[in-house]
Amino acid sequence: MALRDFFLLMAMCLIWASNNIVSKIVVSDMHVPPLAYAAVRFALVALLTLPWLFPAPRPVWRMIVIAQLIGGLNFALLFIGFKTATPTAASIIVQLGVPMTTVLSMVMLGEQVRWRRGIGMALTLAGAVMVMWNPTGVSMSVGLWLVAAAAFAGSLGAVMMKQMEGVKPMQFQAWVGFSSVWPLALFSLIFEHDQLPLAMHAGWPFIGAVIYSALIVSVIAHTVYYHLIQKYEATLISPLTLMTPLATIIMGVLITKDHFDIRIAIGAALALLGVLIVALRPNHVMPLALLWRNRAQ
Image (cartoon, rainbow, N blue to C red; front, side, top):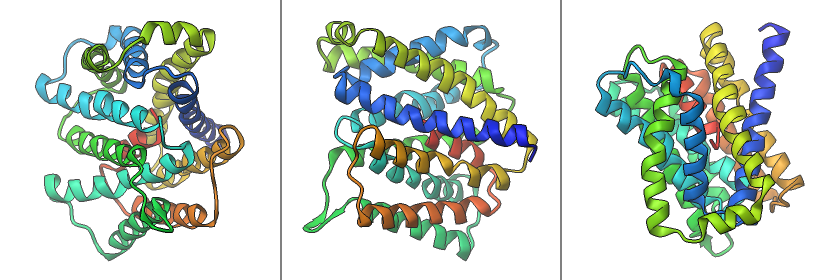
């Protein structure tokens, strides 16, 4: 890999990781309702990518379903989860998206999994369970269960995306933004309150967070990823993107003061080792799956 592209990849991973921290701060510290935050973010993404919305990909209904799974539903669950889950724990639990994608690709695409990838999937699951474990049993942290559900939604959308052809990256971003903003806004109006006063109270930091997440993360960082995955082998790019959860853990401990002990360290090591094993095995849906699990996006 060219040195310039390596630094681009590292910058992309750091941007994704920092966005996990930003999202946690917005919904937890600024107290901005998570559905409202997601709706505003996707509204800006839709506006920025509007020129790529048409011609619409076919079939349109499938694109809308994929956009809801990868965009609206995924982010709704993730941001609500961030109300109680730490970025450190969430970045580990979201790794479940990789084995989930593999299992779904077996069911929906007929892909076969051999023993090495099976071991990787088992290690990832074991690591996630360890992170959710406490001395009295499995922690019923609603936030972490919602993060796991978000990982499943993103994985299902990634596999369904493989069944579509000819959708370019910016067109894909446009449809995710456009299709997601409406249901998110509707459900925010129904289930949340004081969205505008809370956002106004948060002030410029909230505006900066929205611009950062929509422009820098969704549009620029994702476009860089698509460029690199088209230029290099997925087996080279995919393992390097593990920098994202590692950076999230470091930032979480330093910035949001996340709890981190030997149990979480072992769980993280197992989960990331499992993801690495799965990612190194040839898998034609892995690049898109990695894209949508790494951004909190």
